[in-house]
Length: 554
Image (cartoon, rainbow, N blue to C red):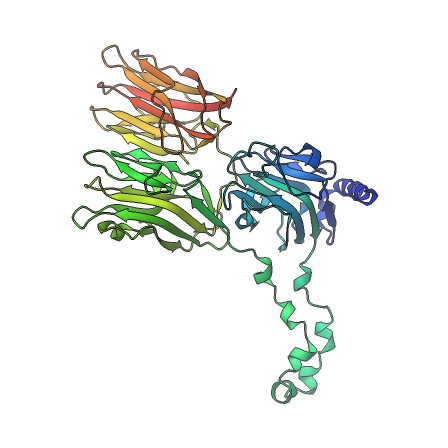
């Protein structure tokens, strides 16, 4: 214990160094044991914390004392120090534990951050080691090449709330110790005498090396192999994400539009996400993944496990495409499974493709485009989707929306007579007071025959049974004869909508000043989506614009 206390004192002394002096040094050792606290590390978004075995609410492997713990679902957070630079490279070794509700359900990765704390890219992703069967401490080590003005951080993200009861394993991350040493990779540094011990080989016997002793190079310089950087041993395998819909939707957004909907349901003995249609005709409906990031290789492979049934006369259709926001998509799909929709597949089959020449660090979504076509007896069922070479976006979902950055993560719903768009408030043809920014969410009608336009928020996480307060800043115009209707409703990630909205207002005045609509909602699931519905009525001068939306916990 005395030694550990001494290491803590030494660490505090290191933290007192001037940063520029620190980055000019190599072979500086930073050792964290977390016996009593986080030892000066910075928590990026406030969810990493210190704990010990006696204070742990959930089960972790025995034999350790204090830990850095992350147990908050969905948000994701980095733990780092502003005083440990990467200017001269960094050797790391970490002892940690993580567990999850399903395979690879908890992310554990090492990130590079800017000096300001912004995410740069992933150093190593160990999410593939996450499993419900984990019950032992894990150990990883590696090397980070030099990079100026970059910081080393630990990232954890959990998809689900921790299980109830003291016997449940932690669905999150616990770090027991971390040893960081600045400087070059010791496994790839050749002895400094290699050049000087054999300088005369070429001049005294220039032909010996080539003709009579071809193995001279190998025997006299046995370090030749190690002078080549050992990238294959230090680089981690590409990250793998398994979306297995038998357990949940795992953050996917199931769309409802064009007379069809994606639903998570059990029709063949196990759960999958499936397309359901209207009694007469349905068209394309989208299911959208959580936000993702392209890995360092610039390649992302996608494999879909699915089942389809259709006919030559009335086929079903299924495609996989990349998207970047609400209305920004690749012009061509990554691959099409339409050929499987002209008959019935023999159970579930797998098919995939690779996105190549992508920009590392680029954000994107995977979209499933399904259509049952004419025959509503057709089948589209997706049980699993796997991505290799991409990581989850390491930022929590928003709880405040001002629409200045567009509609990233939002999904379109019903479009009877129009659709929701983000537009410059000066271009909507109606004089309204200036909003918070220059852009507003605007119900854009196609023609006089307006129907219900629907847009759905990204998934919002909460504690089941808690109350949320939703506030929307709205400007609208209607009349007694032709009122405008605006409703707020909740939707589960399985695709189930509440029977009734928790906000329903009619606007029958020509009052365009910004008004704040506020309502409480009792959440019944771990995650939900906010559904915004508008009907502009039969007057072409009617409109609805939303400046901001906030979602807070009571």
